[in-house]
Image 1 (tube, chains in turn brown, blue):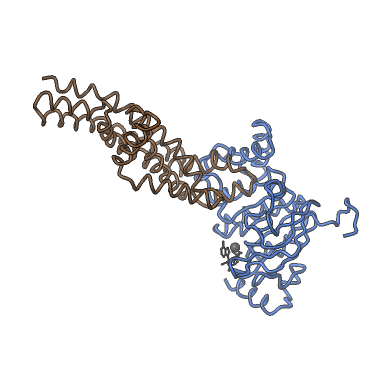
Image 2: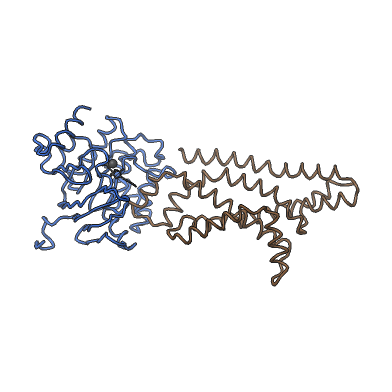
Length: 212
Length: 257
Ligand SMILES: Nc1ncnc2c1ncn2[C@@H]1O[C@H](COP(=O)(O)OP(=O)(O)O)[C@@H](O)[C@H]1O
Ligand SMILES: [Mg+2]
């Protein structure tokens, strides 16, 4: 009757799925936000459409499209890879919007000063605007990481053996449903709270250093 | 334009037929202006008369609708597309100081001045820092080198902004109401740095409402209204005896404040 031990067995996979999807989303989100701010109308429109689609489709539907729709056709995708593609792309869209909002929060004068000094686009973003935008983006990014941690339960439906999946099996085989799921709930909360703490800590630290 | 290239009378900055339209509103209307090396030109005029837009067109923060800008003998046709190379070349020669300072708040005062030198001129960090410190000394802020801008007063921030622009060795400095956001006594310390700069022979175009600065320091005063230059000449002459009715009205309005 070691429900806790069984449910804990799913933790590494949950963390791996969450972290990988977040990493993929953080990087692809940069690509999308760059597209969103491109000088070309076509690139802007395309990036915007991709972001809107990824944010508009329910995550479970998108996961099924990736795994059952695409991943079982010409190309075969393992459940883990399908999960990372699915939730990674959805994360990219959400993080792109968070980045975009944080860039809008940087005063226009910062871009103008950088331009007037003759700084290039890359330097402007990496050295001037980026570091200021990051401070604004961090709380939203951590909030997204917490959502992603919870949404990772969805990938149990395509057969990834994370917390939800092992809990479900445990409930079926033991015949006891309440205890395993309550334990799972407690574990999600325990995993999420350091993130919330981290968010507050970083916010404080970055705002002190920036001395705004 | 028959003077030899080396003639000191040759303008360092020449603006020909510059216009800027926002939709169907003409913010700058066919302005031409030659600035001699070392000349200090003050621009005054009512709000909305196109002063900021004119300055912003000179370093292409706004792309002018038509016109030609020549800095240091190299012309840039600004109607149509300006290439990235021309853009960078032009901005390298023109320094700009904004009303709202626009220092980078996450960088120290020293980094604010050194980073552009490293990135734009390719100076090493040591070279850049040495130049930054010399300039900070000059504007009286050496002690603030390791502070962050939000910890400095507005007057201090504006002096750092001036040092940051000077560090790139511009041929011309543009100032857009550099003291308008400051309390009068803080404005004075900025004006004194600008006066010192003018004495050292820097070519400057200064949009300002500081009529004393204009009359004491400027070599020429330009009055703008509705995107055009409506009057220009020796500052004292223009101030004491304006020829255009609108200049008279505007001058009495700012005197009354
Ligand atoms: N980005 C812009 N878009 C539309 N209109 C603008 C823009 N910038 C300035 N203008 C207009 O151009 C005119 C000149 O503005 P500006 O150059 O700022 O005047 P000044 O600096 O003399 O007060 C104003 O009517 C202003 O509303
Ligand atoms: Mg203005």
